[in-house]
Length: 539
Image (cartoon, rainbow, N blue to C red; front, side, top):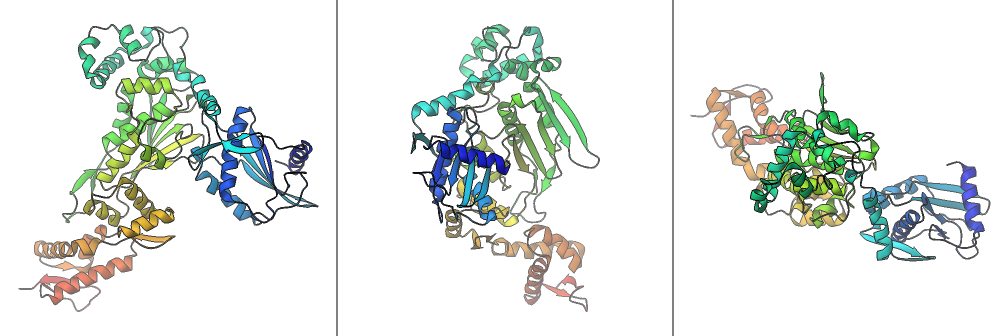
């Protein structure tokens, strides 16, 4: 926004001679309380939505009685103003933050103008979990009527419920309908005998896939023939799998999603993953990805895709990770809050589609799918799913198919009593993601980490837990081969050490183990060199 445009906005706001629900002046000569900024952000974002305005303005450096410019020294360095954007996003619904923060240097002093976006349609904005509004110039709790007025905007634009013109049941795939019947019976076992007596029209009406025998967008997405997907235009009923390697590969999958989701998932090379070779702390091999987790991630993309954006659902396969991407921002307040709440969301982007997928046993009615994904990764000692919800136009979920820190995996293996909340915090440490002071204190109390913020490390439990196992591994190697060189021992042990441990420290650990075996009279070095040692058993 140009300086001239900002000057015009400021002068018009001052000329009003009174604050409104979407304009607020503060002197903030030296500073201003962060919590109050957050509350005003929530309130003014919600009020801008209700008034049909694209944004609201919080203005520092103007006193709020006579509206005279007095100048503000609030966060005088630009880098600290920019940091405020993330600080606010960390505590708001959908990580919403300022559109921009502008500085105007007037003769009377510096003016700081915070441009606050209107709450998205259907999504009231909270700060630290609490919804705020305005009553004239006062900051108040967002009342029930306003809250419901914003929230009901989502229901009024549920495109998944729309009837597709000029369609009949001939546009639906018969195999998909049979699959839908099977899934419905699994979800509603008490109705098995009844389902067999229903014709297709009755069944799909009761499953809430169609409306009064008419074909909906939901019916085409879940059960429509491949060629019928064009009837969704401008929406796109397509899942694209891409192998992100050289040479790469790709394939498109269209409707009916109740069948083609499985076809897309079948393209993923879910290879066997070897944890640690000789050690008995883990199974020798597991699959890189849990089938339920992959299916849940892709079904969530189908359920929560913003079909109004005319985007495709993507499954990106890398060597050691999968990324599931759908158009549209993440609707719940945060991933952590979703897991903590462990229940149905208050609102959905596609409520009719979600209801149909629940009835057809594709997603869980109680809304605990995300928590179950995290729990399954925890039970496999793998890293937690990574939700990238920073882009309001896309939601990306990354599932890692390898252990990235064996100390993390050891802690999960040996401490099954750890809560999911603690494991999520520990996972942040292994990924070098900043955690809160409260989380750090908790992990310290549990003796899971060492160091101080921001230089935290997961406690190295390898030698403490499996020192004898290392000795057994080396003795077994020498017994099998007759002799073992330093390089061969390193090749055996190094893959089992924390990946982020410097190589010289890894080598020092191995030297300590072999030195202990030698001092115990178990092995000896028959080479004149210690760096190029050759070990044999004694006796």
